[in-house]
Length: 164
Picture (cartoon, rainbow, N blue to C red):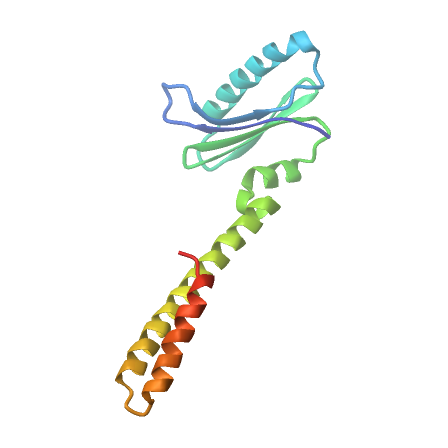
C-alpha cells in the first residue's frame, strides 16, 4: 500500500486546464532516470482526471497497477495516486480530512496559539488591575504617607523583573 502522489487542483471550467495548487509526490521507488517522466505523467493524468470529474462527485480511475482517486468539491479537486492495494475508503478519507486535525504538529501549534491569546488577555487584565490599584492608593485617605511610600518603593523594586 503506497501513496505515490497527492494533488490539489482548481477546476475553473470546461475549456481550460485545471490549475495545480499543491503537488506532493514520492517517486523514489522508480528508477532514477524514470522519475522526471513519472512526475510529468502524474501532472498530465491529474489534470485530465480532475477536468473530467463532475463537481460534488468522487471517482476512481484504474491505470495498470495504480489507481487515481479524486474528489471534486465546488471546483476544488483533490487527487491521490495510489497503488492498486490501497483501500478505497482510506483513500477518500485521506482526501477529505482536515489538515489541522490530521497533523499532530498543526494541532499542537493551534492549541499553543489559543493559549498564547488567553495569556495575553490575562496579562492585559492584570496590568489594568495594577493601574487601578495605583489610582486607589493615590486616592486613599486611609493609608498613611509611610504606607504609600512603602507601596511605591516596592513597586520600583519589582520593576526590574518586568519585560517590556
